[in-house]
Image (tube, rainbow, N blue to C red; front, side):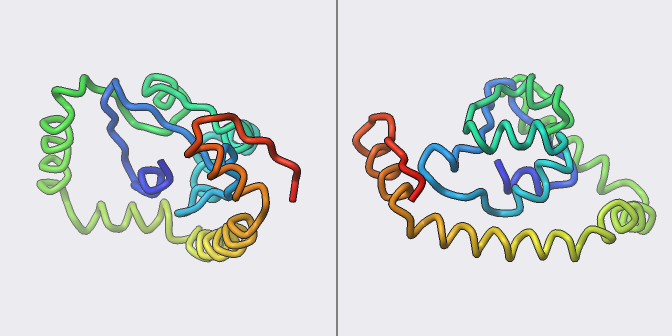
Length: 148
């Protein structure tokens, strides 16, 4: 999910589901999720998704602004290909300038978030909670976390 959030524009198949499942195994979000998700949905909804690890369907993702549009899965490749061609035929210089205006000012903030994610992910990965979460996942049972 977080790699997709880093894209400027996202198109999803209606069968797609999205989730921040890190909390389910005692891990910390990665790949810029702590930066991109609150930017897209606001801090309160991002907190809910991070804390619970709940899955959401494609229509909910669209309503929240996580994806730009939802199409039937059988049409996804054609839709994405057509959209990419439309962009490729557009004015490259103007599109690059718009992208810079939209995102360049946030670069330092993103870099800081990525560094923080690495630090926190390593700390969580070495925790008892993470060991329990991963074990519970493989044993197909609910984890019993103790905050350690």
